[in-house]
Every structure is written in C-alpha cells, then in structure tokens.
Amino acid sequence: EDRRLYSPKYVKEIINKYDFNFSKSLGQNFLIDGNIVRKIVNKANITRDDYVLEIGPGIGTLTEELSMNAKKVIAVELDKNLLPILDETLKSYDNIEIIHGDILKIDLEKLAEEKFEDKNIKVVANLPYYVTTPIVAKLLEKNLNLDSIIVMVQKEVAERMAATPGSKEYGSLSVFVNFYSNPKIILKAPKTVFMPQPKIDSSVIKLDIKKELPEVDREQFFKVVRASFSKRRKTIINSLSSYGFNLDKEAFKKALEEAEIPQDTRAENISVEDFIKLSKILPPLDI
Ligand code: SAM
Image (cartoon, rainbow, N blue to C red; front, side, top):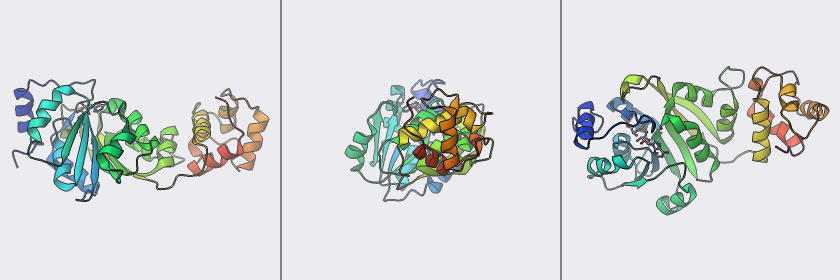
C-alpha cells in the first residue's frame, strides 16, 4: 500500500531523487489521495476490455490505477523531466505506453489508429487546468471513436460544462459540450488531494459521447452560438443583429420567429436543440 504512487511520502521521495521541480505553468498538481484515484477509475467504469488515453500522467499515479484495470493505457506527457520518473514508477506494468508530446499538437486521429487499432477509447485524465477547454474541445471535435471522457477539472469549469439552460453557468461552453456529449459531474475533490495544493477545488466530469451528432452545419451552428452569447445581458435579437453578420435585424427577427424563439429572450435560456433549429433556418453567415 505504502509503495503505491499516491502515497505523499513516495511522491516526495521520487521527486527528490530526480530533483524534480513542479511547474506551475504546466499545471502540475499531482494526486496524493488513493481514495480519489480509485474513485476516478471506478466511476469511469474501466474494465479489462478498455483502451484508455491519459493526458498528463505526471509521475504516473492515475496511470498505475488505470493500468491495473484496463487493457491498455497510452499516456501523453509534455514535460520531459517526468519521463525518467515514469520509467521508474511504471516499470512493472506492461500495458502502458508513455508518449512524449503536447496533446494539443499531436495528431490524435493518427494516434488512435496506430495505438488503439481504431477501438473505442476512454479518455481519463487529471487535466492541466491552463488548457482544459482547448483539450476538451480538441477531443470532442476530432473524429476519434471516443466512448467517454472522464476528466478532473476545476469545479467552476465542470459546472459550466454540465450547465442546463436557465442557470447562470449556462454559456457557449455548455452548448458546445452538450452538442457532442451528455455531461455529468461524478465526483468532487477538495484542494487537499493534490501536491502542491491548488487554490481552487476540483470536480470530475464524465462526458458520454453521443454516437450520433445532430445533423447541422457545425460551423454555422457555432457561429450562431458564439454570437448569441457575445453580449451576456442582451436579448438574442440584439446580440445576433449587432455581431456584424451579413444579415439585417429584420432577417434575424424572421428566423427567430420561424424557430419559435422569442426575440427578447436571452442566450442563456436557449437550448441546444433551439440553437440547432435557428442555425438551420438562417442563411449561411459570413463571419
Ligand atoms: N495525472 C497526474 C496526477 O493526477 O497526479 C498529473 C496531473 S497534472 C494536473 C497535469 C499533467 O499534465 C502534468 O504532468 C503536466 O506536465 C501535463 N501536461 C501539461 N500540459 C500538457 C500538454 N499540453 N500535453 C500533455 N501533457 C501536459
């Protein structure tokens, strides 16, 4: 038990041995709580059939637990100073492969094909918080055959991702995430489960990827969503007509009417389905 990677004593030992310094700019807050590590893997429903992609293994704490439950784990780590550490901490597991690289730059489609033989993939990660949204966006937008994404993120971000229309957290991130997946917050974690301790609390969110996406021109859809949320307190008609599209206010009024969306409502009350309806009715928008 004491030799498991989540033991704070072991974390200290290993980082001292390798003279490792935590990088704040790489979002390095490592898990030091066995309960949380086990719960994440448990809630992610990882079984011996699963192919797992981990982002940012750190010293391998979550990787180890994943390896003990999954068929295969591929973990992408950006910090080269962690590579010799991972070599040591994970040496007794033969179903883990560490890839040195930036998850935002890696060709994920190629990786999925080469390493996962195009099997269904589960992503599990304690994400570096400075790039949470771009990472989740990339995972959702690419054609990756993902089953689910289970990630530890800062509490507020998890709440925004899982928010429903009418709540104050509901925004373009909620629409984006809900377009591609069914999100659910599955775990809360206090600052104390990390070393070093961050200033904020965290949550684990599970995104169950939709097998079939709504039929809509995605570019047009996200243009409409972005414009709609561009001015938080404005009505939908004002946000859309003042955004600078090649369309006058009358045309937006007509489209809203046809979509049965009241023009004085605000974006934070409009569902994903209604945004889809509206973007299909509108003619192609130029910016
Ligand atoms: N999984 C470990 C744990 O839970 O203890 C570490 C989590 S730590 C919050 C985030 C990890 O992501 C760090 O190891 C950091 O070096 C790595 N990282 C940061 N940016 C990255 C990127 N763009 N691509 C891949 N890994 C990254």
